[in-house]
Image (tube, rainbow, N blue to C red):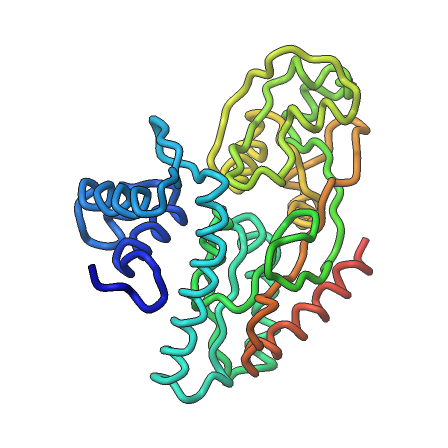
Length: 304
């Protein structure tokens, strides 16, 4: 057998592994790579046999990484991103006017995009691309230079700056609030609750909110949604109570589309952080966007 110089598995197998790990799905990786799911499974089997250890735990709805798989994915994703960045730099000599920022759907829809008009007025020559995803694994994509994350501020190989902290409380539509105007925090488990199935576990759900408030409750009932924005639309339509994130729902409260229900309020466990790859220098465009975000965050912290 010919010995490989770097003693690595085949690059094809590594690329298949990276896509599968990023999507947590062989099927989604196959669609991205334009091959069959069977071909993906075969490449994963090849790399697992060569390494002599499982990299994935197979589940009915997808796959999850083993400890070894997490280690390999972290290094591989960063390396692929760096290679892709160098290739793009070769193809495009000017990085001074283009930047990509990643964030969740909720943050993009309810905080970032409404403020971007100010950025365009001040920097009309810039091009900002938005990668909007609730799956933080997508934030590792090579073109992403800046990320806005919610969490505790510690992510591997990322520099993190706190933009602002957060407060959470129950919100609903005016009609719903009028119907349940005598409701107390202790009665929340008995009301129709609107749940968000966050992909990122750092975001708090109703179960965590009630536990932190020391409100006794059994299995929580209610409707479930894949996006925070949809849950808020239902809340505005008087269909139930949602967990409100103050920085995101404040304008809806000001406009009278949402109101607070009960006096329950608590600081969120995490905050919103601006992050970037600590092993990669920011482009001039990314520096401009970063500094603008710092300015917007300073205004946000001063707002009521």
